[in-house]
Image 1 (cartoon, rainbow, N blue to C red):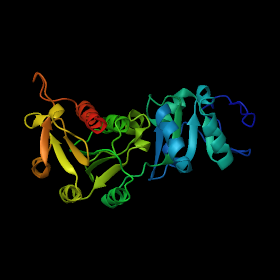
Image 2 (image 1 turned 45 degrees about the vertical axis):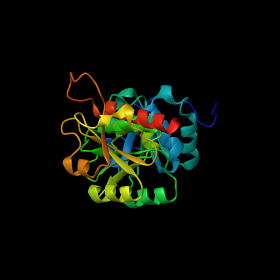
Image 3 (image 1 turned 90 degrees about the vertical axis):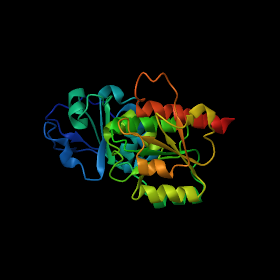
Image 4 (image 1 turned 90 degrees about the horizontal axis):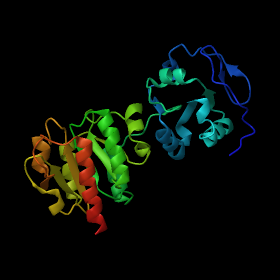
Length: 284
């Protein structure tokens, strides 16, 4: 789409002022830490798919955009939005994007925006009551690697998972790195922090959800079980597996059969197998 209202710009040098819609400039030296413009409830998200999804789902949460020259055409609608909403945007060199995003995987785009919202149990119960959630729930027990969370969210979005749950303070934050790995899925699958996981999972059982724990050593082969209907799939950490208190309240257990040559699968890989089976169960 041609955009005559936005004149071409060269990548900003480290001492160049930040451009803003409507003329004028904001003096700013890019060799100073960009974090000084970042509030506590804000993040610098990066990656093409993550930023596309952020713009599509939460345009009102965007605060500022940093973009490489060669990404301007791809994100022309985003830059038009910035101009109309009088949001700051700046074309910067690749090395400055790496510094701003604190990553070499920025893919030519960084968006400063309000942090991804997280749900609590009350939000989850309200969505269930209003029948806004479709698909299985996924509970992560002791999974703390942000990159694993990002990969799990990507898989969860592909297989129509309703929400990803975990213990408050235990579930990893939706960091910019996790959101980039999720490839846009962080804007589609809610992440829910449970203050009291045992009580909250028990409450879900009372509402008719089956709580199914996964194990490397016990339980029925996953292909032999139907994972359709209202279900909470519980995945544990690679080192410890599902904790005993959570396993004790599970309705049943399943395992992913294999050669036994390794102790367990990576949690994001196991997640993909389980959610694929859940998708198959809902489709038959």
